[in-house]
Amino acid sequence: MKIDATRITGTQFMFSVACFIQSSALLAAFFSPVTLQDSWLAVVFGSAFGLLLVWLYSAFMAAFPGKNLLQVADAAFGTVLGKAVGGLYVWFFVTMAALNIADLGNFTKLMIMEETPNVVLMLACVLISAWAVRHGIEVVTRYSSVFWFVTLGLIGMSIILVLNQIRPENFFPMFDLPFIKYVQGTHIYTMTPIGELVVFLMLAPNVRLTRRRLTRFFFQGFAFGGITFLIVLLRDVAVLGSVLDLFAMPGLVTLRLVNMGTAFSRMEIIFAVMRIMLLFFKITLLYYVSVIAIAQITGVKAYRFLTLSVGAFMTAYGLTLYPGPMEHIASAQKTVPFIWILFEILLPLLTFVTAKARKPSEQGEV
Image (cartoon, rainbow, N blue to C red; front, side):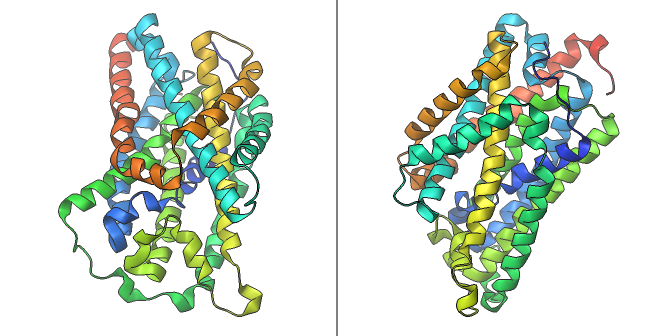
């Protein structure tokens, strides 16, 4: 059953992957308390493992053209077990969307609207996202390239503004931490945000490319997003050094240190613009995937009628997940990366292998 008939181009797909990774580039606080000034090494090592995940996801999409992750699970495990797997993924997608909605509400309240209740800010984001979700994936991803280039330009501007604050010695000492710290930091980065690219398996029916072009666009999007993530982290380490782990938002602190006269004060607004813009994109994509997954599990063909109710639930859910940002960071360091292994590695790999074994006649190139 094809729920959304709209299509996206390879370029839209590529920049959507890049923006999805970029949206988490501002959340280095997940692993910076673990790897300190060597956090950039965790990104390098995590990207190497991430290449294997991207290869798995691109091979999955190419092997089953016109079918999303839940449809392949039905074919692989049968109706009953397939629906159970689908139900797990519905929880996964909705939870990720709710977490990001809560993050956006907390950040906007902190940076811009201190007197506005979180729930109001979260609902405002959901209502705007709902409009895009109701119009299909083409609208959701339409401005992904604009978001990516604007963010790239703002990052470049921020680096120029903090040049006088950069200290090369902040990168030292290197490799001075226990080995397990590098393993933990690499694991956190690999699962968040690289492993979260599993959501793009839900877009397979809307992206029709040859196997070679699909793989190329996926890897290019991964490279664009990963390099941007690394540049942002290198900038923050160069400015903050060993105190990087003291801040929940290192990028915000880095830009608050800009010292170029009155005309260039309060430049943390750059950080605010980037985070709000990218988080909005990520939320909208996760919102869309959640609605599509729920519609498929329940057999609802007109998914648009689910949009507002799902959005309201995600907002309420987001308010109950964590008391505050610090609890979210603690969970992202110790709990979430291990739970996410099931959804980002084990289930996709098992589904891929089982479906290939059971349905050889359905294989083919896109």
